[in-house]
Image 1 (spheres, one colour):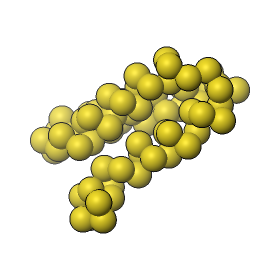
Image 2 (cartoon, helix red, strand yellow):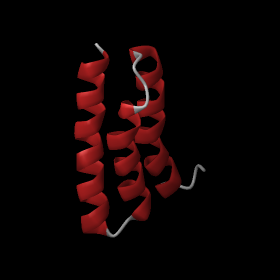
Image 3 (cartoon, rainbow, N blue to C red):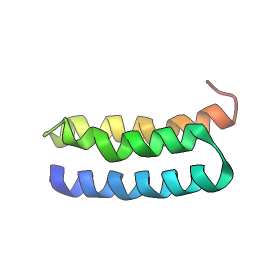
Length: 67
């Protein structure tokens, strides 16, 4: 199960990195890199899911001025 979520969040991280590179947005690029890398440090799906959701939502919140 952790492997599936690792691949899922890694794919979203790749998309975020490409979007950040094209739009020259450091928040999306850094969040994408973190989404790709962080799954190597956690082996539990219960740890991977909430961290991934926060990393997905963070650049959106920063762009809208919520953080």
